[in-house]
Image (cartoon, rainbow, N blue to C red; front, side, top):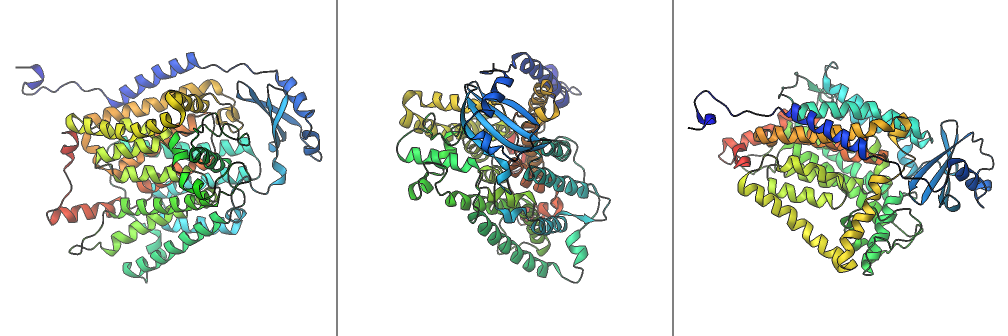
Length: 562
């Protein structure tokens, strides 16, 4: 009889914490040894002199009281000289080969960095903050959930500092909030399950005279009103971010039968650094309104950003209020109210309206990841959805290992087949447009994301770039710990709130350890934090129990490991 089959013996199990620590240490060491900064085309003093002698720069800097110039490398051929007045950003000049001006931006000429000015108004932000607290907060106030609410609100500080051109303070201001949410989400996902302390939603406390059914009607009306506001503010924006121009220009190239990589207009630097699906999904818009430069219309892309936020709100509702109710077992008003509060907490997350008004594709990515969480109990469909999202932006590929970790046998093969079924047609598009070298062209263009220099660098703001490989190794350790945990305890993957927390922790880790960070990336983690930390999980569990009571319960957790 094998030893592990004898009574009283158990197979030896690897601790998730130990596995994560080992992987983190090995990865940090390897990344530290392989990390190197490419040589700059010219020295920093030479780059500054070239920038100051460029034709448009002297006029652009007139009236500026700049007292500091910082030189950063964009790629092996491009350098950027950034001029500051104290901590405030005044202007930036991109130089090719350290001498020729290719782009110059005067940041003092714009009231907002990008997005619609309405979304930055103090009154608008104050209303959104108040609604967010009402939708997500609880009573009594001494509850951990209220600390989660405060951490989420603190992220608005980073946005406002960036609006006023305080770039490095903006980056530093985001660390406490995101760091706290990372620890909270990782603890909820991988720690022991604990029921939250009894509490009452703040909305119920301030509306004691309303029964749940009436509150549901008011919340539905507020949801519709906010959806209209998002659509109106986004499509009226005159200051879209360069990302939407890049994907629309790439989509226009595809419409003309040209692979975007290496064939983009010169206006957006490295506008071809995204996976092929980022451009492919916008081709229907490019057919109607092609974009060939930064003067083209991206109104369609702005509308897509607003619709993505609304789709994400629907997914948050489904995740927190359970599945679609049946006629024989309608959803209780208390459960629907909990789902609506969660959806509204996402839409009133104060940075969101600003993010959506930029037209960025990050909201689309957030909707894709939420749909994947919604499908988590169907691992084959979830794997396919995460692969789809990864071909849109790379970050969701980091979630695939934890998605397939609980699977064995035929389910694992089916999940891998789903990933292949999503990937092969996209590889076919690359070959069809770019020939046999099309996939290599995409990989070469995307590799810029891993070697880029950046003005908005958290590690540059901290002045500790040597610690960045250690942080990146820690993220890989977190993924390894999660894989071991889910491999040993596949039933944990049945809890979608915990999987939302795990996804949030991994995505936050990727953001904090990356070379470049922008507040637009808050869209990735905002809805996941709402689902995992700011929603009534007990209410969300009730529809599952109700379906079990009428004989239509979902597949048991053990089936995941079958």
